[in-house]
Image (cartoon, rainbow over all chains, first blue to last red; front, side):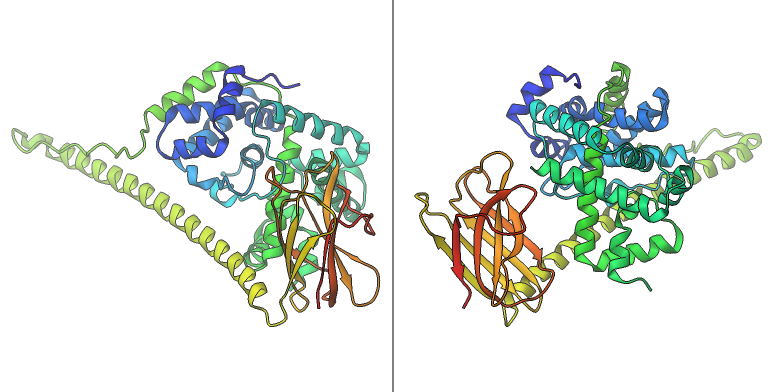
Length: 187
Length: 260
């Protein structure tokens, strides 16, 4: 289970992400520090898994939180969870770096909606555990296809070539895997 | 040109940022005009965010936070770029004039570059704001079209036996195949259960018309549910089902209402 910063967890009872982002918008550096305490492990974890390089993962972490500081309005807190938004941006930026291409992911273009929105340490831990359980329950082929797409940034065609499976099968595996995650997290 | 179904099939690729060139352009254009695909892309990104949580665990070193806090301290909100240095006006020897000119040019180029960057940031911000506003407007227009459709049908669903007096209103347009539901005073659900709305057609079996959960006050709002077929509705009913959904309603009916 993910170790959590207890001080940030206590503070989270008093103010949710929406309020922290509003404070960041007003130029409150402490609010950004609190958001960092809550979500840096998610961003760093994703970047490290993809890049396999602690220095590069730290650069991604720095870049994303600096962007959040500069453009807090890019996150629409009424529509989705900050955790998911940061994780997706971390994934996209890391893949950009992995492919040695200039960053193509603008944080303002990355709009998300719906999904689980854990607001405190307990809820986050439950969601993380649920995701891990769902991933473990998937067949090895499906889990591998999803991980290759998400963490290795391989296209569906590349995955089909690597695994020797038909393209249609790979598309279905990834799509149904995401649907399964969504359904199980909603229940 | 692709059909909507073909776009729909590859939305996961689009959400994963895996499309390039013409494919990407085509998807950008389609997603900009198709609210259903836009919502699905946003939901898929949210799903991808969940997938990322499977890897959460390692904490970054403390130096990362220190570095970030130093960087934002150097960028207080509303801070302006330092004023450009003025070249000296007096006491300049003729021998230094070429160097001074070169220095002045360097300053000018530097300032222009800074200004260019600032303007580019402003354009990016304004573009994002415009896109966001356009998307919100398109969404509001869709809602308005449903509410003002000539065949829009408003059905109030009243309680059967619930002591908390739950109440729901649905608005359904067969021609648009769209449906909204607003509910109040709904009882909390047992774990793993959700409310499910059923459309009772003029003929045939009840059709699932969307699932929803009330908030802590018992209120629920379900917008933009799209029915697969624009059938005429005789009535609507709400039941409690497993969160994965059901093929047919499980008794008892919590609330129901006649359509005609």
